[in-house]
Image: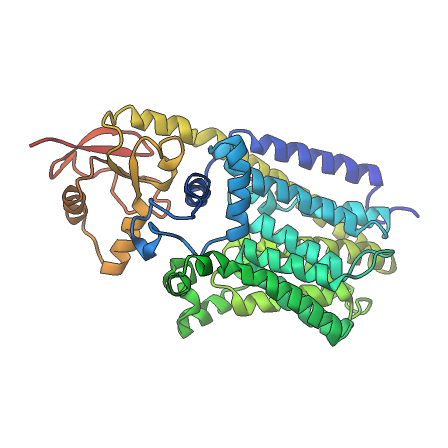
Length: 477
């Protein structure tokens, strides 16, 4: 069968370029501020057998035990880091492995389709700028996405494979254990089975998924802390947008931003929308893949607490396969100008990928190595095992050298008090006998200590400053 858009060799070359580019971005990958928060949870699980947080002190009771967290993701991170050690690089391995596995499953999903459709779907997946940006960030979205996609493949498998609702329910439940946003795969799978197969398959799926998800509360149940789990969920900063009516309606109104946050998301979103418009007469409304994708998007619109761009990954496999399916099966019946338009758009898609590769590589080269920079900061802090207020990323390489409290905790405290003036912050640090304070000039969810703040604030004197951080050390009276 002749190729519709490009020769198969073109897809192969482009995919090899994309994979090579991804590998390059893994080298000296910059660290994002909340990666340390997840790494700390895995760290304590390894060393104490319990997930907790010292970075946030007593906020939400996290210093005694965290019961609301991305459970399967943290467990997977602890498993890997118990063998590899805790470092910026090793914390990224779970996301990288599941991101690559997601692409392999996209390839598997096209095994019974045309070769071009299979290659195109994988190209769209690995060429997505959002994936390029986040695949090596220590966050659970790639793991959640991949397990959720495995659930879909189990209920709507390639030709020659049997549908397995129980296995699909298990995968959907595991996805929700990875990140509670994975509940959308439980909802979409259950409704899809009810509409396409019948209530018995839906019931089997729902029971398997529900039992798997029920493991979320097992640690709290065994510790007799179910009440704490409920309180932590209600008071978690990440869940607050779902509890107020106006806040929730605002998030729902901004939902489209997930798909148009930047060129990274818009490149694929525009392809989906154009194909849906141009090929509307040939696309069956009862198409299984389209139905499932619509259910995913609809359920997430109802459940989501944020319109952040990383959530685009939760839909990436389905959108990639949809576009590939529509282009290869419908385009040959369309006017020649549409064929040329899609060729131009796919070339543009690759250009967007290249732009994102460049942005990541530039970031990797301009942002200092986290562990090396932390070691530099520590060289100005000779009193070990003392209390330190610092950005979350100071965790890497220094967790066992100091008692670290995160600047993010004080940001939460400032929001709770409606204000926390700089002098009050330093007085509070003095009362708590904090030895060193490290500012965060990038303001990655940190309490703001301005770079032009006075050199002396109470008993604290500036002993080091660069474009990233300032260190204040407590002076003896």
